[in-house]
Length: 127
Image (cartoon, rainbow, N blue to C red):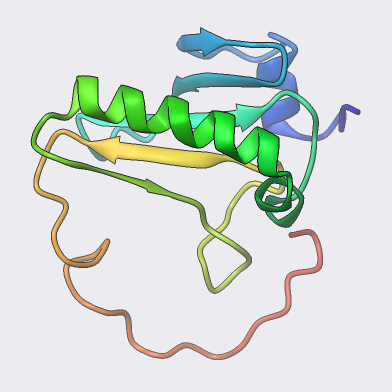
């Protein structure tokens, strides 16, 4: 299923530009265009789904995780992170499920170097 408004669906369909690293029938890997870290890849199912649906799909999340781990070992011998953001408080910005692989530099204890201050609850129904 494709969501015509979804940026990641457009990247999967090659309707939006991306630097593709790997393609399979059920997921693709491309460079994140934010460039916050020397290695910053997005592993994205080719079918539009939510984060929860991806993480509940044991076969697909296993394939993505194995690829991310193998690639992390190759590209980031000093260490790396494999992570997903869920919902507004988790800083999820795309409704299409995806996994981040980041590394190539010391990532610190937390993403911003220290735990964030408590924020007001927010309900984002698109995620």
